[in-house]
Length: 324
Image (cartoon, rainbow, N blue to C red; front, side, top):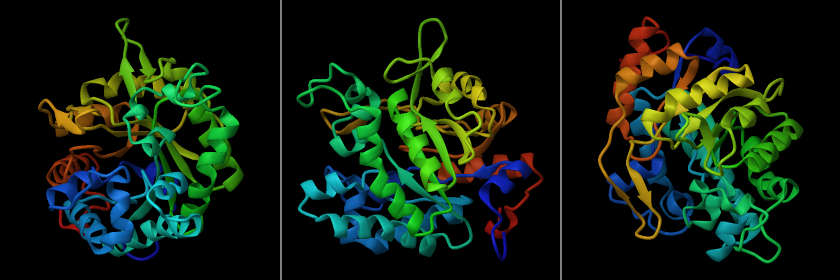
């Protein structure tokens, strides 16, 4: 990938591309505190060089896409920490600059986390805030219009800062997917839509809110801004079922599961054991996955293993510059 990078959509048409892993996982492993409500977004202001170093670690491992530290970086979230709107949006834009510095040879994906991430209470794993009966505020859950208004400033800031694609990720509810897709069309910037899903007793992939995932993925069919749809922050064992549902969109697919451990929102810690089996990535790619990586608890070593798997599958295409 020397010289000018092609558009990500063109690269996906040629074959699989390797994503990075859990940025906060790597920052925490390096001794940085990501326990606040801002998570890794705190370091955009307080320790930007740490963010650069974490991106560099994933790039060295073979990641071709650097995902910005903006998952939990919102005007509202920063506001609760005493950061005004202008500075908040400047920090969102800085996340793109830091990703470029850490991984200058790849694409930069501007992370757009769900509304639940700003609440910092684990509600991205329930989607409860999209329920009309939600008790989190007077009047119930957020409407599509309200979710669009929430996401708009950050999406515009990431696009304006030069992100190659926006990663609309860990989306737990149909209403939020609809809002993100609508904003992407207005902005005219490439996006991927990634749900967090579960498999029900009947073997059907569903959003965390409980809607059939295939119906949500189908919203992206024909959307010019969408370069891929799929899942992240999902148990690796459930990825195959989710990707089958994602075929409803008619686009390339994206798969970057977590390690298989579970997040205890009350205790703010991960429980259980897990790991992403690189061999599983072969099945994901056979199912149409063209963006492959990891999410929470997947560090550079895990991405290196995935990169070797992808490299072997595609004859080491575009991976030689990483020394893989």
